[in-house]
Length: 608
Image 1 (cartoon, rainbow, N blue to C red):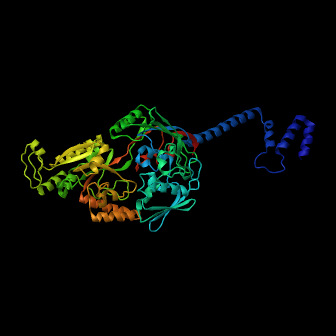
Image 2: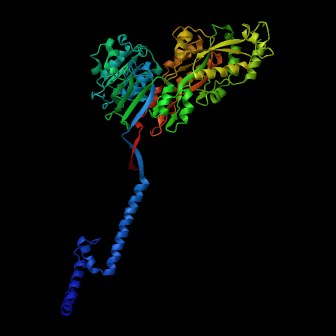
Image 3: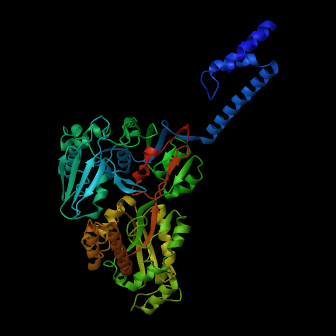
């Protein structure tokens, strides 16, 4: 039929014939296609009229722009900023580096800051997870809690490229235990044996269970191949103390000294081969200042963009600095008012001690004196730690305190002051009564700092409301321990103590620590508390250990050897250009860098 049609076209018009042949090419198929072939599309323009071609061009342009709009809209809607490698962060700190070495760093905050960035331990402390594996891939503890076994990561390397091995752990712990190295950590691993199970496995064997032991395993590990050639007595003299080789997220870059030989700046660079997530920040630079005032001025003048510590006096100034973010995580530092019953026997009267505790308005000290930069403390275990409880709270009630003193025989004069029980005062004039040794009065000793001045004066006012006179005595902070605390030469002592990761109360409240050198400042002696403290130290189950800490807290608060006033926050400042997650709790100043590898300054665009 189609041939006949062609014959008729030949007889009529050659142009009609050409068109028919073209249609035959377009429509004749040997195989059915779901979509026209490319050869068929090539013939399409010859089949369209001029207007049809214009419509096709416009439709094509609209189609292309629609695709571009859809793709662009999707990208715009799903494009986000993500961290990028780069940038420099400059922080000011107080002091100067001396021994950037885990063997010695615990004696100096600056050394500890730098060591925490350069070195890494078997475990690390995380603000959310607590103690968690670091160089260690895994940790196992035997049933008796006397052996801790660690498997070291296969990809953990020192900054010189050497793999971290079990022998490096052995060398570090043995060096700490060796008196020739003179490490201040020598007592930390007392009665601890370390053995190498294989090239990547090491075990710590204790003579008896000690639950807080894990917190000691954050100590940085030294590369044995580098340190083995250095004699122990020469270890404090080697250049490695200022040009260290560790395995942490940052490595030594350079430092600069002034004409007097003091280090003025110290720079670290990112460890791109870090076994965990490599840091985003390229360079960390530290600048060193003699005191908090100089550091605050440097922050204000933009000589640094962050500050490792903000003193109580400088907090308001820092809050008003729009270039930085003030960070104030909880810190296990307790400020306590201690009663020395052996120096002043009046303090041996529980009525007097409890009356003092009831007369102190802790909340007012927190809110008004310290402007909310601390939190109230009601027992020996700080908030954020196992065993913290609010059950043993002493209620602020001056009326109850006054009634208890009246009933106990501490008579009150018309001017509000009280005399000692069974004594007769010589006069009721204010001056005479205040100087009379028969009056109910005590001397309070504290460090000569702005914070302690303010708190001591608040305590003086609180106790005046119940007829007790406080005479304030302030001593230079660097002399307080040697001149007053260690010889126990005080009546009332206002001071602070700092806990580690586990609130082990042995050093502070066990009766054996009352002797010189111990931290049981007031000679507290309670056999039941002693027993509980020892049991808690051996308890492997954290929940049971926390329960014992609560029992200890309740017993100590009931005995009232001291008044637990407040728990501090640690204040530091970070540039507003730095992206980071502020910690809610840190255990030491260097813990502000606990997750430094996730800090970043630079960003880039990416699709989510």
